[in-house]
Image (tube, rainbow, N blue to C red; front, side, top):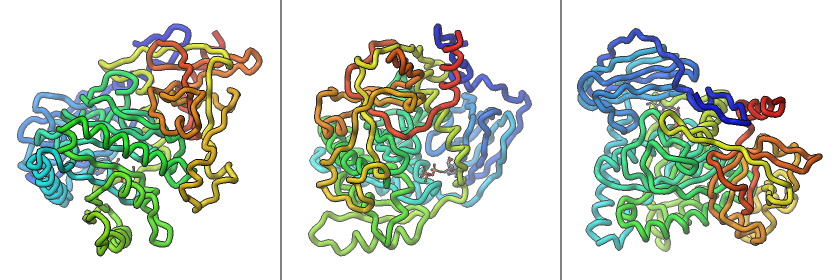
Length: 472
Ligand SMILES: Nc1ncnc2c1ncn2[C@@H]1O[C@H](COP(=O)(O)OP(=O)(O)OP(=O)(O)O)[C@@H](O)[C@H]1O
């Protein structure tokens, strides 16, 4: 059990997998090229063990002797050649599907492999495939990114994955964007995980690059595009220093919001394509999006070639409710502070004077009259993006991004700075002018510029711990 002196933090936050599973198990036989689709709640875990044959979870191969525990999961175990699974616990729903998109995923993987081979043959002069995946919410974008990444790793590559979806964090908290090179197979239970910038990761990655977005939707505010530009520069320079990743190329996961398109115009998609020099644009689950983008990217003699590829949405994709997404986010944020299983962290709380910390608030499109919707020229990017604030009860329960910038730096320098880590505002005492911060690891309160956004929202468990602490 995790005990945190002075904090009385709820231990269940750190150890969700202590939730009991039913001891009775059952056998599920799967024929070749079929998948077992299942949904597991956040309160009852389900275990899966591969008894015979071969199987994979979104591209990551199941080891025969391992028992995998799933909680709050919607997923599928696919088999190319048939297998037998031993399943324990209560699923919310499950069925076996014979129609899956796995063959088209595999074909896409082989097409990317030939581009990687070309990069190797050029002595790394050419970069490997630069892939962007777009499509509406719940179309299966993240699932495709995970599958392609797992296949690439299995082939011995070290692809870079870039997450530009603030609704879900990758190796970091929701509200952040990140990029990391993966060199070893993904953790089946944890997926991308959320802890590497706060502590050890079950998924070996090179240190991720993290940037703070702090808003829910990429179409909101005016910092999305400058951040994409900044990340593209950072990723390109990282790839120049890392031959293996340069050859493997990168895969960008995006938010469904950028695929809605206003009158057939997809400014944010176009911005990502041009800044990252994307050459493979995969649309998933929307014919209209595919047609609009094909029209946009064919017959452009003066520009670099962008191949637009269409994939159908898998019948297994589940529409996730806002409640489910919130619970998932909160689990991710708790994990950021407490770690998970064997990788438990030792969070600490620190109290600082208002005068010792420097917090900037994002001025988003809704509140800044200088940012008119749809008016997105370069000039706007130089306008004020932050305002310095004095801590108040309003930021209680918010995450603060600790940037690598100094509080004396210009706004654009702060905006473009990467993130060292996050702290949670546990308490603000306006009378005593003190702020209490929860941090994943002990350390001094940083004097760097910190940025607070309106996203993600407060996590009930963490807030509760603050109240308990106050009453001690
Ligand atoms: N074949 C499948 N069987 C069962 N569940 C699946 C399958 N494919 C995807 N899912 C589940 O469906 C949900 C939506 O898929 P995914 O997260 O890949 O979509 P997305 O397009 O990235 O969504 P968003 O843009 O909203 O983040 C996820 O919970 C995912 O695990």
